[in-house]
Length: 320
Ligand code: DGY
Figure 1 (cartoon, protein in one colour):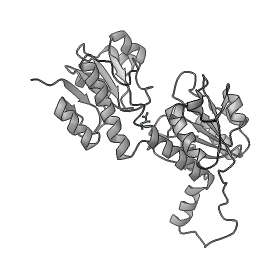
Figure 2: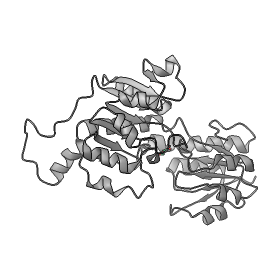
Figure 3: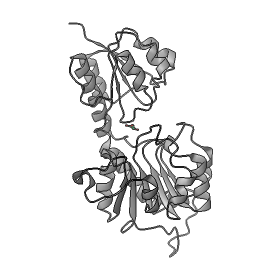
Figure 4: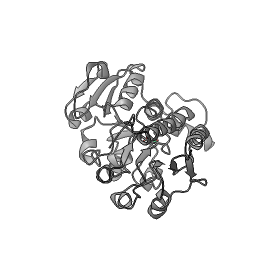
């Protein structure tokens, strides 16, 4: 029996590739390069499904050139700003993501950034690696404890809830802003703010867990940062384009923001050069889901979505 044809645009974990080879006639981007729009379109020719990642931009223009054979685009991410959903819908192409697989790993990175920023971990490591450490000093690298501090979560979805759960173990007080109020089970006692400004005003630590949408893009700008308590920590594990980089860098320089912990950036991998000059930043290279457990689960979830669509069933995580 001939297998359905699948394009896999990046080299995923071995277990995921093995399953994809077992069930599909697989076209794998063996050398893991970033494909141009033209190559994406060319390699989708004759395919039934595409398993893509956030580095492949499925704009309306690309989607308009996809072949009629392509029935499903499964992204190996919870984020979907790289896919024009309306264009896919108009073409009758199903799109699905991997919301559950990324939750714990991303929440752990948020906690790492919160702790690293509060305790100035990057400065401590630099001191050692630059061979400048003169030994223990009472007032060296004084940071802040987390207990009793207010954690403001922008976007109490699955990841936001997982961050809240972990932060509670550090005795933080949890606040959140969402467009809609969460259920008591989702809130677990977290305090709801019906405006972003309301959340910002009480956030000793702001953790961004909201998706990139026309409403959220650029929303963490100078006006928003000015509403934070002076010296607040800003952590972003969602998408870089929610933050106005010039404004955050200015706030880090002025002390309005005390520290930033960032895993995601606008224009990745070309991050704003101003970040390199600052001491009070903890910068990671978009590694929120970089654990093998998440990588396998993300790939299996994407394949589950594809399996379902090609079998005429509803995918487990449909976007369109
Ligand atoms: C996601 O799932 O959107 C993550 O950013 C991938 O690491």
